[in-house]
Image 1 (cartoon, rainbow, N blue to C red):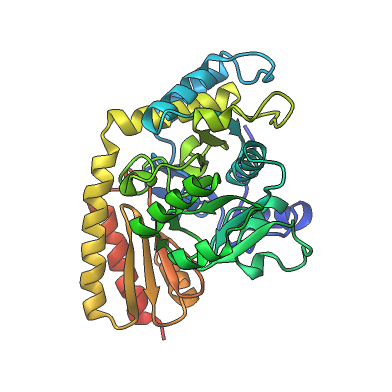
Image 2: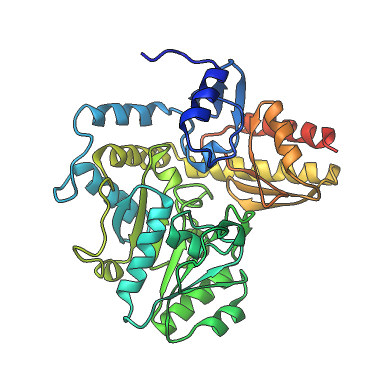
Amino acid sequence: MADVLSTKETLDLFDRYVVANYGRLPVVIVRGEGSRVWDADGKEYLDLFAGWAVTALGHCHPRLVAAIREQAGQLIYMANHMYTQPQGRLAQLLSEQSFGGKCFFCNSGAEAIEAAIKLARLHTPREKYKVLTFEDSFHGRTFGAISATAQSKYHQGFQPLLAGFEYLPLNDLDAVYGAVDDETCGILVEPIQGEGGVNVCTDEFLQGLRNLCDERGMVLMFDEVQTGVGRTGKMFAYQHSGVVPDIMTLAKHLGGGVPIGAIVAKPEVAASMKPGTHASTFGGNALTAAAACAVLETILDEKLLDHVNEVGAFAMGRLRELQQKQPKIKQVRGIGLMIGIELAVGGAAVFKKCLEKGMLTNCTHDTVLRFMPSLTVTREEVEQGIAILAEALEETE
């Protein structure tokens, strides 16, 4: 067993050997259980951000841990020119819980976006290559994904970006109809923008996109990397509107903390991805597929979607009560356990105060605090988190 390092020793290791591409907090997390984590100094934190909306079942859920241990003792990896049972079982679960599509597996949300864009181009005539995306969207950090992301701050230092992406205002169908031309192959949209500030697409907007894609022979892609696998109280966010995409991207929750990405595509669209057109060395490996199966099966067996709806409604209600008393809260919005708290003041100081008081959350777009806890979070933990937030707002200038 490796030696236990102090916080300073760990920070020194990172300073010497790890690329400094993250703005890290000076906290070393060494253990997690449910919605709690502990740092190297023994301090306990309430985690209401679930590791960037990744730990769907909470930290180290017994069923997920058992599935990983069992699979690791049987088969960890086999190249994709062979078949493995966990990958087939995972594809079946995703297909049956969504719209009957076929799956391609990779390792992250950005990779899933890359696969979706390539498939959209493969499925449409060669002259069609443009993709429409939306202002304040976020689709990942690879070149294709940042080119699709309509936020200039992610483009700095990487121009020229890939050609063919056009950015439009969200929930504005007229703008979309005006932008489509004979070279447009598809539309990529988050049903709820996460990093963009928890901005919810209207049902009418999503239905309009579906109608337009059907009329013009384009591919409709939903980025459900953050909204998928139970986050909004349904297995997938598209199910709230009833608008079915041609391709859906998944990651984050899907592995419960184990890295995995996926697309689910309608069978007639999936048929355009033929051998040699796309691949992923580690995609859908036995270990990650077994973990993802455990996540999905636990959500279903433990009726966590009902729990998300119940606790999410409770959280929204309590936050809106706090809003009535606290003028620093401008708006509370979201669905299920994907909640944005827009502040009338800068959020960085509030975030820092919450951290000092032992709560992990997130601030995006300077003024939006995000609550995206694990699907297993309790009402009592939500109540504790809102109390910490109330204190932090009171104590922040």
